[in-house]
Amino acid sequence: MARTISIANQKGGVGKTTTAVNLSASLAAKGRTVLLIDCDPQGNAASALGIDKLSDAKTIYDVMINGLDARAAIQKSDFGVEIIPSNINLAGAEVELAALDGREFKMREALETLLDAYDFILIDCPPSLGLLTLNALNASDAVLIPIQCEFYALEGVTQLLHVIELVKSNYNPLLAIDGVLLTMYDARTRLGQQVIAEVKKNFGYLVYETFIPRSVRLSEAPSFGMPIIAYDKRSRGAQVYLSLADEVLNSTRQA
Image 1 (cartoon, rainbow, N blue to C red):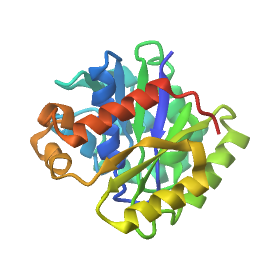
Image 2 (cartoon, helix red, strand yellow; image 1 turned 60 degrees about the vertical axis):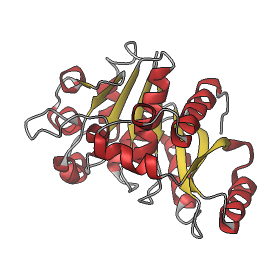
Image 3 (cartoon, helix red, strand yellow; image 1 turned 90 degrees about the horizontal axis):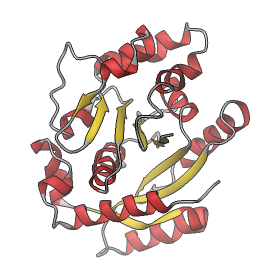
């Protein structure tokens, strides 16, 4: 059975898609079978894996709203990761889902036929706490929370934790926080150290030992349609995502 992990934080620009793409590729590089689901209407995960966002390609929208078999929407990348892409049509899915019976469980139902085919299913969530994120959390075993090393790092995280608790209480009692990932870390600044201390004070052992640094190479890789381990496997960015993959593989944390 696949381990399903949502990468979630309603705050934008914290590295959700970067982490979804590069963690997926790193897990695949370690011999795991991986499916990445793009649940963000911006649809950037596919292009970051070198897959064109074709207007006629089947997407997670077709799966959740139109009842398409999820297997018909899967595309293969050149990096060992398979993906169900997204596009701008998903932006209206919140309204369309609201009118459907069992709207909170559309993604869980869609993934049931795929659980035996993969070791990991990663879900790149949108920067919101609406029905798309709720669907992702209901379909997941765990949540990975990226937090940017900036002054307002923890802003809004309390809301996310509240939603996670609501999901556990009402829909998915086995949902756990796999870990909190510090992103865009700059070791040269005092602020970076202060944010680490504050996040550890709030989350303790849930904070991954791996920090994702600010990196030009990490920023460049998506424009070439590659995860960082393919774009520059010797870079610091590649090494930290491989380390994060090891932490995820070895994780036994529950919250």
